[in-house]
Image (cartoon, rainbow, N blue to C red; front, side):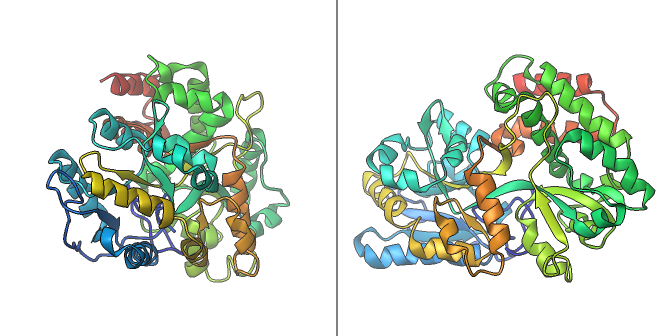
Length: 449
């Protein structure tokens, strides 16, 4: 998974990017991990409550302020805080959970990784907590709970910010060819030769990063087969990747590759360096499918591309005859906090109090907005007025809060093993070295293993 760049700029995978950051999408700074007392987090060692967070401003500061504010109000339930770089966190949390030394509060992506925790009895069932706190649950986007739910029970609290995948376009390119942004797949395909003839690449794509390719499949699966298509795969339906809707989506994306839809050499373009964004704001490409977190970096690095009103954005086109709801979206529905099942009763109570009183506050909501992100909080759009990016923030808010379904990024939703197989096979699919059926067969095998 990649790591987002600083809020306002940004990559995609800051662990909490899905909001945790980038999701205020923050890139994780290169500072090393630090830890305070009680680092084991109320786990098997009997320590007090603790919490691990990711580094990188401004998200790190917002998280730290929330914990410090809680600690000042609850000196007898003080939460010990430790911070880690993204990669260091991922390595350390695996070891800590396996050794029953996890922090009380565990940042997680939700999805497949959370399901593994649940299967191993390592995280607490938070369903009773939300039953006891219906107002808090009602404050959070309903669509964010799917990635926190395993077998009908809630095992993590959605938090921080929301990051849907958006179809960006350069208004100048569309004006040059006298076209409008596509609302259907057929319209998008028809624009490919138009832009190529005008000397503009139809679509920028950081194909070397692989997860950027995945976003095209996520939307096509949803638009063609509806939310149930991927859900059946996620839930382990035998030969789920071979369903007709799956083969159709795989075929359509290869049709787009063969038609010259993506910029020449896209397999060598990296998203981690923001090279794909540069192709859009420099006028070399007309469109780009990417997370909402890249808005800030294009604003920072793209000259007057954003501030001059040249950036346009919309949701993904519909597919004629598809079963998907046009309001459905994909991406990062939220950041998530789970609670260690090995924590002491006292540490668990402190964590629950923090969840109830410290995570979603007026101060944290305002801070996420000021960082350029949309909080996963119902009604937070009332605070957008007067901000520099009010129009953009409202678009993201409406897209996320009004989504019929908000499908989590596949490499987060699937188990780590299946996610890696997915990225390997997506690279082959876009490189036209496997057929749609061969892709499906490979993924069926990976899912069954």
